[in-house]
Structures are given as structure tokens and as C-alpha cells.
Image 1 (cartoon, one colour):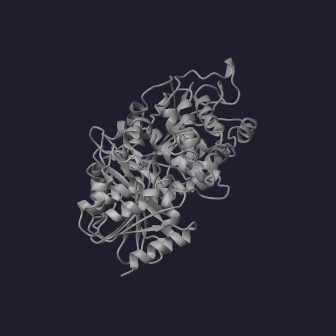
Image 2 (cartoon, helix red, strand yellow):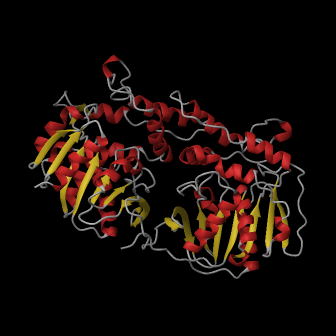
Image 3 (spheres, one colour):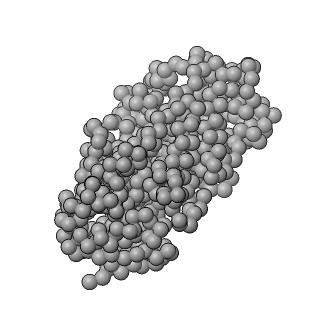
Length: 570
């Protein structure tokens, strides 16, 4: 079955597609005339998900991650606003959308305006919500001051600064000039919205300001007069960029200007405006994808419990399916995927509740079997028969249960297997103590302290084992991880702070020894010398009837060669 062929149970589904060699990500929901929504830079499509769902009863709604935002690839270099508009037009073409309603908010409205000017044949009508109406001097100042650098630091101050930057934009216009005269007349976003915005900045990394700088360098002056399609300008006192009293253009024969009070339901206005223009397509297509040799493509596998993110390198032969450690994602497996994909197709999945996969449905606590069942569903969607399977840490436990639950696994690699003490083995990890202390919760807080606490929680993993034993006895005498690598892994955690603990808790409750004894396929258990789980990995290998143990070399190519020898050996 092809990716996305099933409908998503919630009605709002996530998809990837390719446009001129660039991978882009979008949300889709509803049915009827096509309406395309563009968020402001640097926010992801999720920022407009509530609006999309409100419109879904009457329209086929597509919300795009603009290039470099959310899960869409960046354009590279120093893109201009015209480059972004061209990318949106290419994406419309990739989805088979010949004509649509178009909506943009904030700097996304600037992109929407440029698309409508350059491609009027594609646009039935355009709605520009809080279009920045700036003088040249204001644009120059914003280009210089609006987007500070957020260089990672071990003390986590950049995390606090990112939160501050996201929050201050809802308080002052512009955010860096706080005062009574610049205070916005609007409600402050709730902490969960600010958490999503901070995660959007983190995932965009150094390129988070590319779109903003392109927008500030681009003047919309005169563009409204050039529009050949019906347009509507929505203005508000809560506009975070346009200064109070800014010049509002005359509507002209094709235009309408509507001033809205803070906090209205935009869907009411959009329904009326879209209905008034008409003429949009009533369908779009899920385009087929052809990957370049060796390239990692992303896609979603829609299963009954929800969507599972997949990374895949195409190839021939028996596929290798890879499951990552919690609480990160398959993004951290990409270097090893590339090494192992030289002789086979390789597929890596974000486990449920981690990365970009939906969490399991139902009531927690979940066990490893629940997570394994979702992997089995994903493999069924892919119509995979025989396969080899790799799992690391929590992913190793899930891989074990997948092997026990599904026929077709031929070889199994388990990296970093967890063995627990249930009162009879004080030399093993203390299960009860881990369940009590290992999994703090990080409820979003208005001041962002939860996100800083999560940074230091993950930092403690690199210096202590277990992380909560911050004493001499708990010191990890291992080389320090590089800051850039640590920051990349933290981004994956920050995306799913609400559900990161679900697979972790399942792993801590897993009866490892009992399950390993039931494996009937050739199994390699391995661990790095500085992995705290290495000490009992040889014992774990001895529990598998056809198991073997190996210490992993320090270099990635050596690890890949050891795994390749096992997978292709007799």
C-alpha cells in the first residue's frame, strides 16, 4: 500500500511531497474547494491546524510548511521572498492544484501576495491576514534586529532566550522594544502554543530567520494594485509587525479591507470570502515519489492508531528496518542508515510518541507490546514480507516484541539491551527506583522554565548514570558528547515533551530476560564500550538461543561493517 493511502482517523493528516527536487511537508483535511493556508515565518503548519479544522467542513484545506520551516527542506543560500513564492507555486503544481483559494498570515501573507501577483491563474482569491505594512526604515531595522542568533550553550541559556523571543512577540511590537506605547492589545498565547513555537524555532535551527529576513527585505508597496484576482486585507490591533496607525491601502475595484477586533474566529470570515470568489479546484493528488539514489526520503504511514513517520533509502533486496532509542527519533539514525543502505533498502521509523509519529491511542500506561503492534501495522502498510530488524535501547525492546509477534524477521540486531533487577539481582538496573525517578514530566509553563529543565534533564544523561544519581557513585567516566550533537538530539526531545515518557516507561517495565529467551532468529546483541548497558549485554546475548555478543567499535564505518557482516553472513 502506498504512503497516505488510508484516511487519518482524526481527519487532519500529514504528508510529504517533492517539488523540483525539494521535499516539502503539508497538512491536509476536509473536502470541497481547495483552500491553501500559509503560516507566518518561522512557524510550522501546525500553527494553523485549528483554522484548517474549522474550515474542513466546506473546503479541502492544505496547510504548507514554508521552506525551512516545520518539516520542509530549506531553499539554501539566501532566499528572497520571490524564491519562497516560487517554491509555493511549485508545491501547488506538485499537488495537482491548478486553482485554489489562498490565505496567508503575517509574513506568510507577504508570500501569499507574491504568489497571487506572479501566478494569478492559480488563485481564485487571496486573503492577506495582518500583512506587514512597513516603511523602508522600519523594514531595515527589523531586518537588523528581529532575528538574534541562538547559539547553543551547555548552560541552556539559548533555550531560555528562544522561549523569551517567542513570548515577547505576543506582548510588544516589535518584540525588542518593550514599553507602554508598543504593548499589543491581545491575549498572551497559552503555554502549549508557545511550546510549539519554541520547538519550531529549534527545528529550523540557524535558518529560522531566513524567511523573516526575506520578508523584511521585500516591500509589498504597489503589489496590491497589481493584483488581478479578488483580494481581502484583514487588519487587527494585535498585528505583531505593522505599527499602529500604519497606512492602510485603498481597496480598489478588486479589494476589500476588513478590520477585526483581537481574537476573532477567522474561519467565519474565510468561509464567506472563499465562497464569494469561488472557482477553486475540488481535489488534489498525492503525487508519486522517485528518490535519488542513496537519498533519505521521509513519508507518513497511516495506520489505525495514527500516523508513523518513516525515513527510507530505496534499494533492492531484503530491507532492514531500524528503530531508534527513546526519547529521540529516527533522525539520529540517518548516518548509520546511509552506511547500511549501500547493499539494501533501509527504513527507519519514529516510534509512537517520539519524533513526528503520533502517540499510541487509549489510556496509558502502555507496554512495549503496544509500541511493537504499531510497528507491525506500519510494516503491513508497507507490505513488507521478509526483513531484517535493528533496534537500539528502547527500540531494541520494541524490535524484540516485533520479532515475537510477526513472521518474516530473518536477522535481529539489538543494541544496548536493558536488564532489570526485580529484587533478586542487585547487580542489575533497579527497576522500581527507575520507574519512580527516571521520567519527570515537563508541563508547559508560561515562563519557559519547563523547557530549560528538560535541557538539563537531558544534559544529566551525559554525566551521570542513572541521570538522577548525581553523586560520585553515579559519575559516567566517558568522553563528553559534542555540543552540536547534543543539541540536535534535544531538538527531537523538545518536539514531543508531552509524550516522550510513554515508550520510556514501557521500557522500564519490560520483562527483558523472559522475552529474549523466546527469540528464534539469529540475533546479534551489541553495545558501545561507554554505553552503561554494555556490562550485562553479554549475559543478554546468552539468553537468546541463537544469540551472539559483540562490542561495537568507536567509528561509524566499523559499526556498519560489523552489522553488515552479521546481516549477510551464513
